[in-house]
Image (cartoon, rainbow, N blue to C red; front, top):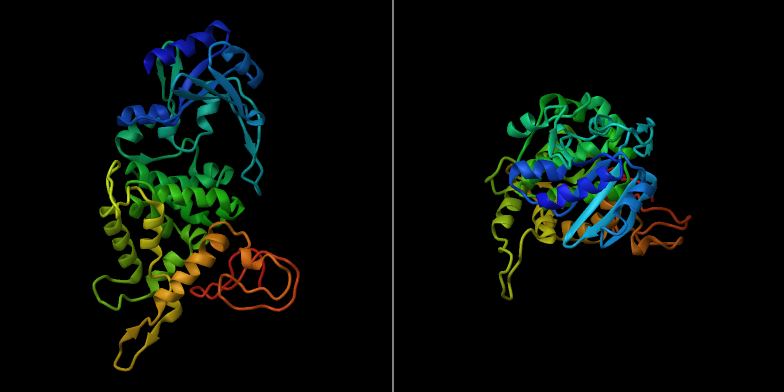
Length: 370
């Protein structure tokens, strides 16, 4: 890997540009992990990135020219090279007002966490760590380069990324970062549902998803992105093996992960991990309990048919209505449709996103009210 880094670094230096390996690949090198992609930042604008790579890269493509990013492939290696950024953000949007910068330090300060704000200048292989990311990485601590309130106000998706990194990297959230996430949890509402969904999926596929989910619940983020999960805290485990259904569901998730097969395993019943379907099924298997809770004579509690309610809601409501906030196939017509979220019909009306009332929370989620 080092010869490639020196080679591309010299290529840009000869063209009069600065280049640095940055972010995840630098962090992962200290963790002994291999990054699938190589992320670089440089002083050249996008058109000069392309011209510098011409003849050296096997192919190049436009990843996001307006954001300064050009992709390239050299042999088996994939590179993404982005012009130094010095963005600004509007309060009601996570989309940046893109501004290209001229200094590596300006680029690093706008990154999500200090462990991702480390760089390696090329071709000289000079380590750059202005925010103490290596020390935070050694202490397994997520810290922001800016004050966390500024970082999360600029881009609320970083709060979801914090939970995801807890799952993937087995790190902890710094107390001030956790406090800011708690105070600003409702700001996640300005982020597109697709981006939130992608972060949740990556979290679930991590090595420690329970820890990541606990961050979401403890900070209040789950109330906005996965509300059925914290609702399970209110329900008692009728088998009296765990303190509540929430704790029980997390334990089942861990047990399901233990049953996943290693890559390369073969056989009829093999489930190679990490498997998103298996993990979602384990996590959501009891979400029908709050809607079916019944207090029996003698002080007992029952949840008859909770598996049916939960299965129906997960299959036809959870993914289309909660994870993507998009109308289900059964709710695209404008007249007398059946809501995929509750199974209840609604009368004539305009075509709108399904915003039906959640059977667990008793309130609507996004879109409209049916």
